[in-house]
Length: 445
Image (tube, rainbow, N blue to C red):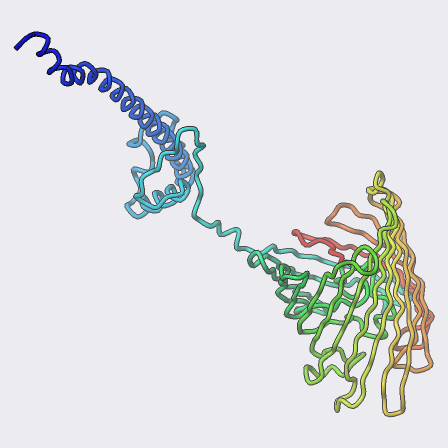
């Protein structure tokens, strides 16, 4: 065979032999780089795992009264080596939870350039505990007669509240009055219903006017307004039932809200107090307007109806108009402010003798002198449904000093032309201290 023919016939194999070393070299370089990257990831994970093990060793040493291991200790020197098999398994399970993997599951390396993230799959038991608060309301009364001068624990309230899930929360308030504990409120509140709706189910204070919703310790003065006491009693209006609220698109003012509530008939002052045979129906609507950057006004309408006798033959209807004006200059809101609230109420009560109508109203103003001092004045007037033809008026100036967000001191003088149950004038001086432990402070609604 000629040399030329030999070279032509051997060209493909020779070409492959010449190209193979270059291709093989390139491939081996890629494999080496990938192995190097994997090795770096493994070393990084091993370093982080060793750091976590050292941290757990330190925690276990503190719990067992031993010294924390030094940073350079080896796994054989760690206190974990002295643990029992069950304790070691618990530690490994907690460590696996921090790494976001199952026990025995290998770590998955992150992609090049991707930040490593560790997600715990465990739940902290603390997150399941409700917020717990304790509020105390203590006052001293000076009334001019030895039998009326005394110290009183007006209210001791235990408050429990917590979100149940993203859609609902629950609240419970236990109140001690007269040496006995009772349930003032206990309800579940669905706050994320569609269409601006909210649903409350349980025992609650009704959304009547401005002050009925407030607990005793949060009231702007010591004691509820005289018209509330005459129409609903000293405790106000509350019951067990359901409440539906709605936030409609604004139609009157900048904001509107509507409540429709149905509760047991547990109020024996305005109604019969005989339970759910004939429930109490209530409607409340609020309108809000921004007047300026420093002030706003709210106007609300309320109506409630229920039977007032054991046989269910006669009904009581109560109507209310409430208002709230608030002024707080933005640059001085911590030091200056004015709050003006009031309510006009009308009651129509059916009885065997005919129909009895009663009117009543209150209004008060609280001015903020500085960051801690407040001064205020409340005026009351009401006719007495339980004593037709009689009425009572009163005036109550007061001073407040907020030692902190948790402590309030108040001095209040109250004069009324007569008492609700006795036709004698009344003058009383109060020294009140209200304090709170926990997140539920002197809440206002």
